[in-house]
Length: 193
Image (cartoon, rainbow, N blue to C red):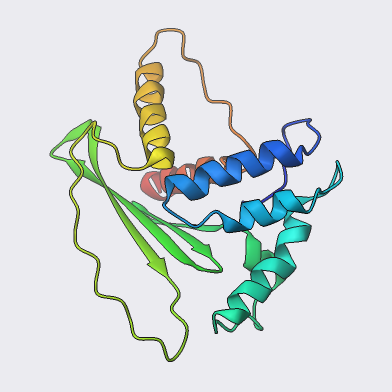
């Protein structure tokens, strides 16, 4: 996913304040430091500025100050979320600061329910002692799991109900979601071969 650029299917101008608000909300939801957003707001960026173009040198400089070598990363490696789907149930998000890995597992033979596993991996600069291993946390269904994931999980329930609606005729996908459709098309071809 291209960070700081509206989806190509949305005919919208880039609004820096809206993007900064969304970025701040996401950082807070994941418990991340929001000083970067404060610094970006103090720059009084002109309308039409692509946030990603401002972030590239800031992220590279900040990671360099932390002792994390980013010399081999391209500009898109620094700011974008590279998503990989591993058949049949793993989603890997590779970012410059680390990775997120999500895995879905069925509950018995019920296609309407699943276990959702999440792992967060952060890069640690060379020479720094590794922090203690994170404890496994089980979050019961319906309990808060962070604002971003809570929002996503609410949407899963709404979408699942919608799939069973008699008026459901198909999905409308964003440009990023077309990759998911492609994955399922490939799976179907594989299973039907």
